[in-house]
Length: 265
Image (cartoon, rainbow, N blue to C red; front, side):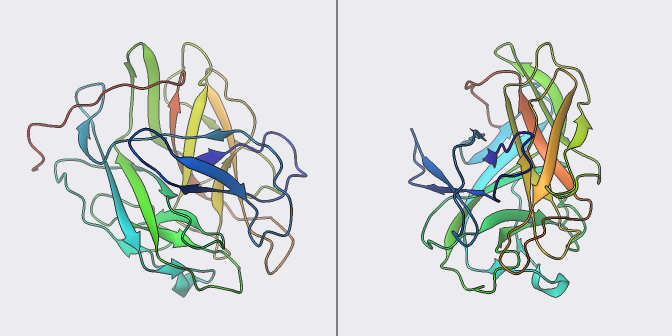
């Protein structure tokens, strides 16, 4: 799930917390890191996938979804952002889009999903795929174990049940909330502006720790994002450039995926 801040530059930082994820529903709330400021009401965009390996609607590309117990909590500083190595099931896939969520509320203190590859500044790939939760610059770095869920996808643009979908890894141009809103142009134009856009930061160039947020409404051709930081150690929310993975849906809804006949390269 991804919070939408809109164009306002005055909203406090907020992450999406989740609990009681089941077969028919889940609960979410916004949380300000440190719980020092009110989050107010904001839209949240979510994508849900049943655990397993799947063929995407174009019949060519793959996705897989998995949950696990995260026992590590990463924090700011280059050597402290390690993630947890994952073993992907589908060796035939070449995943370049990673979304994720801390799915439980075992610890009332905030944390947020992140992913990386061979280094903290390298996005996850099928060959080196690490996910986890981080607490940015929070001086209190200990957290209870949480369930983390991730969705790995190949990049594609197609339709499912007449709904256009695009998954893609954007360029390394998205900066902090205080720096402004940054534009991604879709690989292919949509017939109408996507109603749901879900995003996760890919890797961590900035050692302070950050997460992806939605800004202005998407158009047929573009979406706008920033990354945000907590204010536990310093109030500024400027940040260096980051890459963001996203999945955009022309409208909200659901559709059925099918498992592949073979998951070996």
